[in-house]
Image (cartoon, rainbow over all chains, first blue to last red; front, side, top):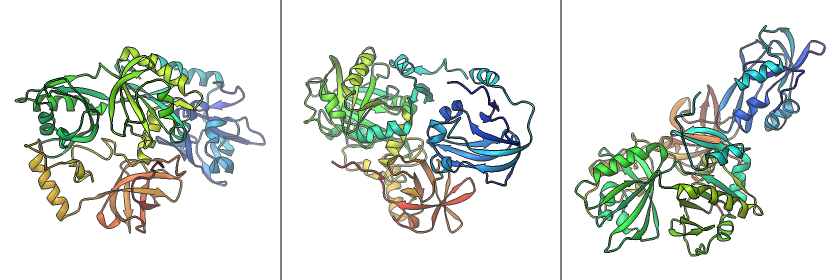
Length: 125
Length: 377
């Protein structure tokens, strides 16, 4: 698998797009989606919610388990992906594209977000 | 995370070449899934799936008194099992607690009325069962042999399984009934061919020598190509058995429950000849269950999409009235399902106001009779 170069990554396996007009798109990586197995339910924050870097902001349920969703940055949620709410399998089939989770107007971000190369090394660790 | 101590089946390299996600299951490194577990599940329901179940614990029992010994050691009436047939049964402690659930195959008579049985235990309990059988065999002219390393076990499950298997064997599969097993040859490999499984579908389990496992797997894969057979991992095996309402030791069954507490009192045969381990405690448990019905194993179907997991509380009117033992999203029903033990007052299908406490949120669930899924014959 290849982790897109233009994204940045958290150690909790979320990805973050470069901000456009201050807004970044957030999702989980293909590595995380593969580890979860078939995702059957996603609970996301709502538009207008304030999310904080490193804190849980939702849940992902797969056949075998439920996992917390961590927010990689701090800010205000501007939009959630309603397509992935109604069809959670998008997280598995297109984790970096149609399976994106929500958008955040970023006010603060931690210093330890990883580049694609660093994230590759981290998951191969 | 080191996996060097995990036991590997004869098919290990093959699983890895197929890209399987592996998992530690009862000390074995087993395939959890090869691709999507939902696709694997649906393949078994509609076509066919191929499983490596070599982690299961095989124990051979032979000797002139093998039947009497097993009647003493297990709760079922094993002496009445005919050659070539199998029986679902349990082994209990002196206190009546379930040590494991088992399938016992009566293979053949080795001559002079000396039968041979194959006892198949869960991987997690195989040592406990083996130790108990050895201990209980004292005084009987019967031999208990650890055959865990003597067999690989492959299962072909699903509506297409008989056609696939028949293309590789001369054995009369049409004449092989559910819960029957006979020796034969599959793809040139000697096998015990059993019509058993843990999926709720028609299917077969093939006990072969480990050195034949790869050859047999490849032959089955090739024979199943046109019929849509896919390799299947333990993840879909769990959702298949859950939909079929089949108990899993460690979830629905445990040493702290007697078969009567677990709703499986029917496997205890008091009418059989001779004493058996746990009889007194089980008779008490049966009488107690008659007087004060214990919690009942029921099915729960979600109205929402959040998935109940083992250990979650079942609630009604703000009170805890039961506990989930197994839960998963059901590919067949398209909704989360669970098995749970609930107080008798809430066990009737359609009982209103039942919910599962899913991490603090009370999600409404419908009480249904088990199983969730029954195949059309």
